[in-house]
Image (cartoon, rainbow, N blue to C red; front, side, top):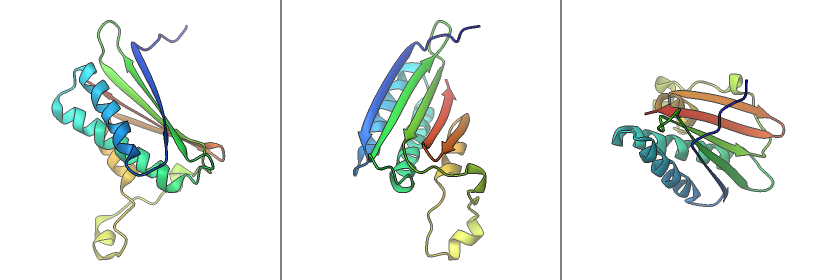
Length: 144
């Protein structure tokens, strides 16, 4: 069985530079609107894209200092799902070893960061992470 082709596909290659996550979020918003998502769901896609880009920018240690985003719109006849892949060529990590943030620890902690993956998982319908010493890809999707 062959995989069907997406209805639309957009690829962006962005430098890891200030505010580039906003460029990515605009593309995500436009495609979520194309899928026919509600305003709230469009905002959730936008925020998840921002979080995934910021995580890549801050943690990948990618030598080429770029992130590649691939947006795919899926549907049998009309668009009904948006898939977003955020990829870097960084050092990778073991997703199962990422400590789950706990609010009771963060309240008293000087460093309040560390919520990115949890936020992404809460905003999107499905999130998968593929990571190795050759880079990381966060694959997230949301249906209409």
